[in-house]
Image (tube, rainbow over all chains, first blue to last red; front, side):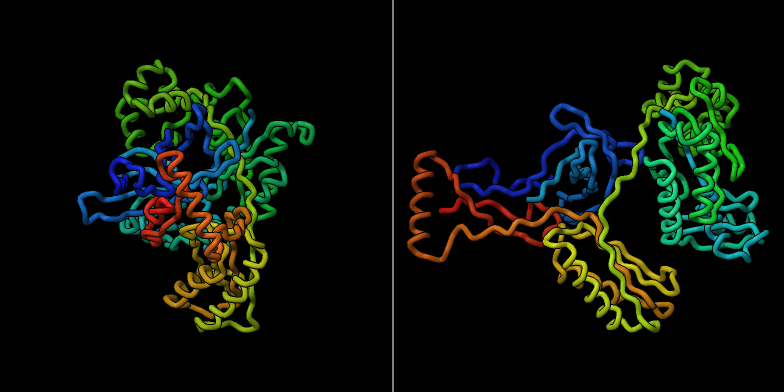
Length: 96
Length: 388
């Protein structure tokens, strides 16, 4: 994950927009998520609508490598998540 | 749930043969940069390197894979299947699953339904498919793969394990490593695997073990996931005679994009698919995914310009087609909260100061761009206390 620049938040601190949120995902054989946990309920992924990869700052000690997936969930919602290929874990990417 | 599997064996080879009658009677190998993707030449198998395949079948016709064309034919196949069974899932090029339940009233039996599916594929694509019907995807696929093209097989519910008993382990949807390990354990048929205690297979193959044993036993809980119909906006422009000049193609792109953004009516698109055609065949195509959903004609045109400027066309183009997909919601057009009136600004600033004093922390923030071109959305903008 990209470290927050502000450290602990003080009343006047900056706040990032669209900070990714940790999400529980169950990856399938091809690595794409098969199900996501939302509000303590596992939702099947009906369709992986898109997938793409970003790599950045590989020249630094904190490289960023992510595989993004645009997902259609069984409840009809679409969601963008990514797997942090550098440090592991699944994250929900928000766009506001 | 009864599921039908419809597949065109050696799909890429079949599409090439359909397009070029001169290939009749000749062994054909289709390859891409990773190696062989499909072949009907003796001794050549998928995944083999091109060099090795050429050594194996020197007399075969070697063709480079045309994925764009395979995609078009596969889509036509899925469309045709949906006319017979409304819920259809794509399972790779030339293979699909369909919900066979609830259609008993329309067909005498399952084989009649399978026949209708095969017929639909032949009418739409000219390709001869085979079909299998069973109570799970895997068994339906095996049933379809084990009959000749144009034929169908049906496995009655409860007879899956018996049906799979003598089938080769190579039919399992796993890579060569697992199949080789099964072979080393002297497990040659699916019946051999199913005869073992499930726990033993799990211990040997860990996370793959459970599913492997279940599949070999005829149990496949995987649900049918019908493809979803998404809205597509398509616009095309044809030239009276073929063109190769980039400027002409960009001008066509501009016209098309203007029409498309007009049809978006304030909504956004996630992807743009540009195709250049000559005599109805795709000469070049590119699928662009926007960094953020966009309804902006300048963004779309810039992408088209950039891609086309690098292009060397092998032949004159007679048609340009642009398709927008991933259509999103309408963008809200919010009016300004802060007007330029000094009195208004002073009032707002005072209200913000009072709110901060009341709650002891900032409660009104403004958005500042810090790295608007970052590829990571959380790095593009920050919230700053309004009165900071």
